Amino acid sequence: ERSTFRACLTECFNAGNGVSALKVVEKMEDAMLKPDAGDVHLIVLALCRNNKEEPGLWEDAFELLLQYAAGTEEGGEAARGVVDVVSYNAVLKCMGEGQRCEDSIRLMKLMENDEDAAPISAHPIPNMATYHAVIEALSSSQGDKAAEIIRSMPKRGIIPTVYTFELAMPTLLKDHKRLDRAVDLLDMMHDLKIVSPTVFYNKAISALARVGQLEPATRLLSKMKERKIERDTVTFNALISACANKGRATDALKLLNECKEEERVELDIITYTNTIRACARGNMSIKALELLDEVKEIGLPLDAYVYTAAIDACAKGRMWKKALDVLE
Image 1 (tube, rainbow, N blue to C red):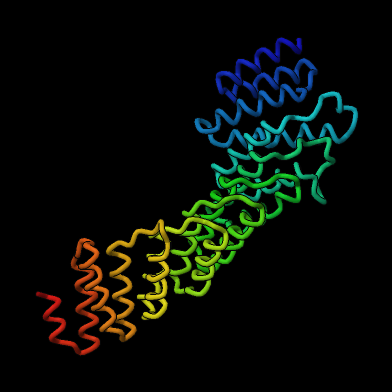
Image 2: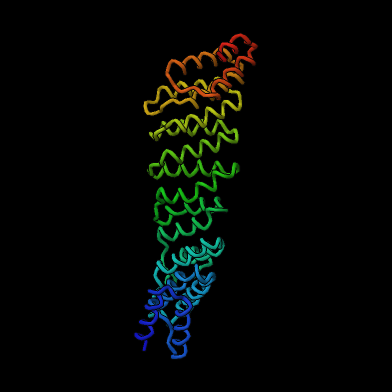
């Protein structure tokens, strides 16, 4: 009879019909049969596949995993085996889609066999997909916890990948109070010898610059050079723009010169416009006009923004004739 029920559960799994799978379980109970690990695997996956059409079925899957594990712990059920990690990961993915952060952490800790968790024999050992599912569940609102989980992974023998960090970074970068956590993750990537994409650093530098944290942003720019992470126009423009907003002309000019030394950085009109703005606000009007001349010599396309920045520099320096020359 067990083989008959297994065939029915396989059909439910193939059809993604979790509701029917639960009915099969009821029939098994009537026949005095308890689902084994393979049965639970099929039931859980059928429920998770059906979850989008019938929201909440993942909760039945979660409860089934816990009940099965509890039965294994009590003894006398060890022959049923441990449900595989794929089933657990499917439930975790559903939890993430439903923003059930605490539930996903609870299930992960059961798998990790932490202090209050069940014996290791009751649950499968978590793998990379397990952590990705939990981090994804946390990534939209609990960046701190996501970062904490990433930091714990190497201790459990699982080295994070670029994708792991990509899941956690956006939420951290949106909150100015957690930007230091994002920088910590970049440092962790370096320590683990994981090559970070330039875009990770660019987004972190832009986020820091946007809230006026120029020193941390500048340090991160220096780290890119030390770590041989390619720096591009976007990297420098974000910092120069922040310098312009703060009127830090000397820093903006230093960054401009650094740009010129970078073979792979192509200076654009935004680079010069922001540097000219920085000079205007930093009372370096003559230097601002020199930069405008430099733009013309290079042959970059001039726009209203660069002219506005140059005229603003003339106004702040009371150089009215020069302002008229710029207009001409």
